[in-house]
Image 1: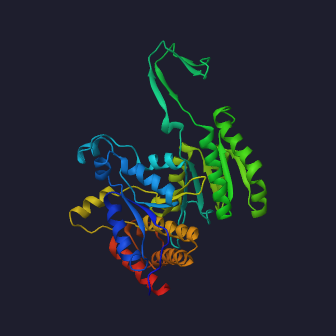
Image 2: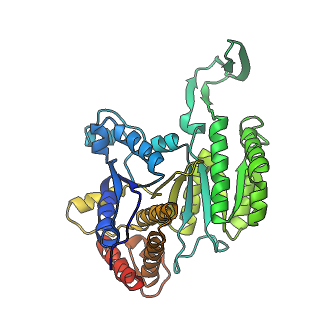
Length: 403
């Protein structure tokens, strides 16, 4: 067959360790034989980030703003051990955090449901999408250890130099700790609009939850901004689409989620989203079976795998040992980006290819051919555990039939 043409390039962000190996396999086996693949390539592998003093990460984010769609491989966020292992100049920041800040985006993560892998919560028959605010709160905090006898205050100095003070605590009987958090109205507004737009795009109800009864200024501000934007910009659109925006307290939301059947978007503040996305992923089966897309309020999309670089398998690979690494999340990052590129460029062949590649992947698993992690979870009677490359080759067999 003639290769599918692309009009506008994707921004391609390569990554680290086992996912970097899988990245190349996916391109060689499942993409370049069928697509005249056009990408603007950025190497976000830790060694190249170190060589460029992390400039490559910033460049890739700016390119994403230019082209509108990116696909990203998993990357290492270095710790002290990685500093030594890779001989780093400094402990470079998380590429995901840098990109999220530049794009002002919200992360949407959705489980991939396949026959044979039953969620641990049996009522969940439809996927739950977690929308995580990706700015501020505990991730940009300031914190201190406080000696006994100290008095700690929150101090705000306005642009005219006027101070407002509020007592945090007098540590008269014990030493302790304090933490300062912040967020900004602009980012909260971007979070809200990204969530409302994603709900309209996917025609799903949107839930949002904070703890505004306890946090009467901080969390309540999130609630108010969401409500103001919804009422002024989205209520009529939601009514026309037949979907609902629903606000509740975070503890009530957790109870409702556990009792629900799924099939909606659950918007969470940064820390809540961090925790709940892992809980939802695990309850549905695996982080390797989650799609993840960063969406900015002005319509820029960056698709990625929700998991890390699979370090343990990479070390086995370096020894020449076979691995059975799940490539589904990385593969669906590619299909998500290709579909969005096709939608933006009005190239239906590209969208159809992405749909068929996803269908071929799910069919492979439902036919009983899967990587080791899924074989442990699947209830299918005749399972066959295959290695990393064999799994992709099995997908390719089914893709050829669909094309």
